[in-house]
Image 1 (cartoon, rainbow over the protein chains, first blue to last red):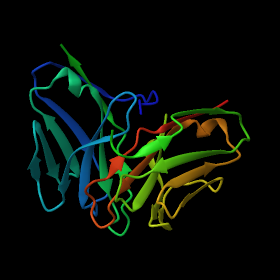
Image 2 (image 1 turned 45 degrees about the vertical axis):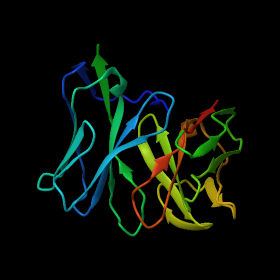
Image 3 (image 1 turned 120 degrees about the vertical axis):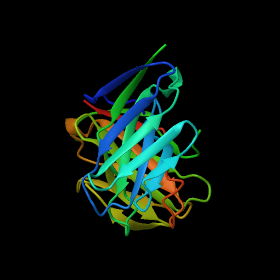
Length: 113
Length: 113
């Protein structure tokens, strides 16, 4: 599951700081969004999701914000830890008749100890 | 362990050959999805099966095909392989009628030489 060498934007943060990862989506009809984390050697792992009738959802140490006006999604990670180092993808469901997800290109998060 | 099992983990084959990738979904999940993660295109949806029948098709080449068997495992067949088919291939499974619980396996890394 390791990323295959994508030339990804990278966000470097210090351990304990908060991280914000951004994602722009393209389809205003998308009604469901998911953030996935992909660690080296593993498949994408579900972090948090949000439906289009919400603008904020909180999980454990993570918050997703949805701004439908500008078609923007963000993932906030509080008190970032070395174990948070991974590639993060946003995904959208564009067609509620199908459950295929459309993934963004990903952001690599590097947490410095 | 996500509960979604993919085999083999690694596969190296020559151009022009045919390979079969296998996926066993999580217990109780009826839907299986195949995704390709390549260097320049991120995660791309290929195809979805639900309870043995094709449900949705994405950017899947005609050289590729899939099926889902009565025991719900799925196989992705890739033929006339080209160098550009080198990628990670992920399978995911879910309960059909909700977008929750969309779980990925660890992937098969295919290298075409």
